[in-house]
Length: 299
Image (cartoon, rainbow, N blue to C red; front, side, top):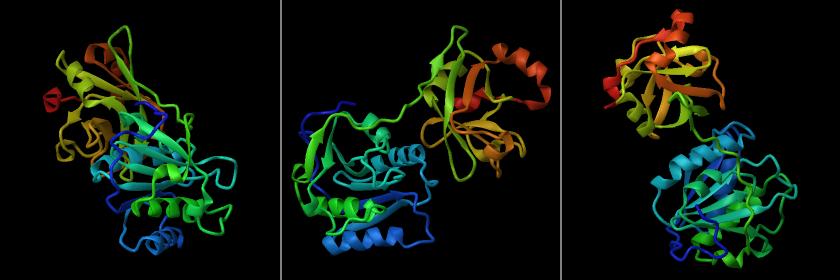
């Protein structure tokens, strides 16, 4: 990633699609209000709900979900993200421009994932009130600032007409897996999805390389998992297991149940992948929490 002092040379022409990611839930009018503003400014735009199910104020989850979904949208898509506990304060309203997409929302780390994934990006603080609603609420910048800005982008308004370039966007601290002297790879749970799957930051390729050297064990809290499956149907009921998820990272799952609840897991908790011999002592100490691995399922 690289933060430019100018817009990416290949900034795409807006395609008319506007995605919405928020912690609004579905029981109130907030998501609908954004769509009303969007279509009032540009009736030809196409709003798409990415998710409104982010937990309230959970910026990290919003960043993760947005980064997972946005690459699947066409070039020129505008993404609105509103997980904004600092709404009404001095936090900046932000427009991020990459070679493929536009992102509009609060400058609070919500766009960390997409900025890290981009080859280059530019950040614009939205300052031109001509592209806001005439009355701006201190509690609903999604409706009054972010939605209007996004709609104007789809109408062809130049990003730099909306504000000024900045080079210091807020970035979340992102953990990176580490390899120990004993060859063990330690990462962390970075997200827990609706099904209770524990999504880690340990890449599938890293797990596969270790598996080529022999059977492996996965440690999560006080639990040792020694089974890696290629699909949920392979897993015995009641046994947590490892699986390479759709994000191409290691996940810990429980067939037809929640691994989060069964393991009392939390985001940020360490997950270690190690050769089975390195885990044997721990396994012997906790035999009731050990499960068999089928390394062939990684190949």
